[in-house]
Amino acid sequence: MKEIKPARRVSDIKEYYFSRKLRELADLNAKGADIISLGIGGPDRPPSEKVITTLQREAAVASNHSYQSYNGLPQLRGAFSQWYKEKYGVELNPDTEILPLIGSKEGVMHLSLTFLNPGDGVLVPDPGYPTYTSVSQLIGAEIFTYDLTEDNDWLPDFDALERLPLDRIKLMWVNYPHMPTGRPADMQTFRKIVEFGRKHGIVIAHDNPYSFILNKEPVSILQVEGAKDICVELNSLSKSHNMAGWRVAMAASNPSFISWILKVKSNIDSGQFKPVMLAAAEALKSGEEWYDELYEVYAERRKIAERIMEELGCFFDPSQKGLFLWGRVPEEYESGQQLADKLFYEAGVFITPGFIFGKNGENYIRISLCATPDKLSESLTRIISWKNNTR
Image 1 (cartoon, helix red, strand yellow):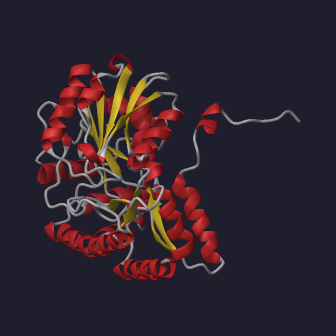
Image 2 (cartoon, rainbow, N blue to C red):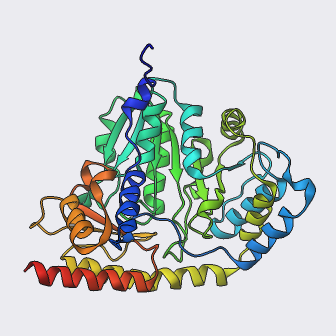
Image 3 (cartoon, helix red, strand yellow):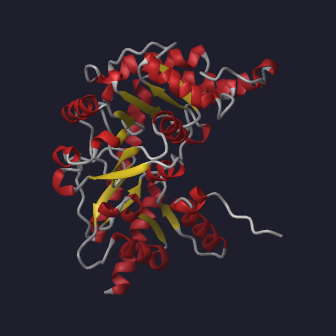
């Protein structure tokens, strides 16, 4: 039999880090290891009761199980539009400027296929969400990483960007509040990014899933005047409404961009489940009490995560926003990976090493707040015991 090989793109990418590490964690726990995971950012709490009730009620309706429109229910687009108006002060036409998505991770692929031909350049932050890189590799784009460093407050260096071959670059990925560093969004930076995109004809893709986590003042890049001309913003209910497994997200931009993305999307998926969309529309109507409770939950967890960082001797910026805590490891460790491996195999605590987000993350670790206070406190206890035993 002639040997069968996968396409080159399969060889060019690696299995997602968390896919591999969580499999190892599960295998070890199955053998009795009892490792606590503070790695992945998957909310451990449910959505509101109204959301679940809506799903249950609508799933029992016989006519709700057929294919739906590729651009989502009008009720969902309208709810997204009202949400953006109330929370960000951004006006979006629900019929032409919003496209519901089956998760914003899928949206990264949709946008890349829409705006990048094979060989086109794409700007990817380092450190940054690994999917920006892997998707760019899958479609055959040329990746130009741009450095985000602690010395520059994890913001783009626009002088360095201007020295790149910008005539070859068609798309730039941006993400604030930034994952993994937690650097908050600010309008001055957003204005510079929009100006940069307009100047060079580069589409700005802003990934905005963390704006409601430990943040009383969420912002959108679409608040910048003229941003819709050049920007696409992805947003998601995964973190803001505890609906990660529901796969509900959106893209917002000008009507032309949205129509182009829809062309791609309609050839990839067949729409979302109607009861899920109706439940998501209900989630978007949540009052301030929902966001206040979300804040309090993560604020309590954040205090324990900070104590873990302090116990490990890591430096962290207390102004961080979002679902994680990012810290620079002390000089006694060669890298964040060395410390993370010690904690994993010797203390029974899984913390994410920063190298998976790029070379600029090599000396850092990241703690997820998606664990109960009891689990976080147990992790702290284990780490204190581990430190005492290794002295």
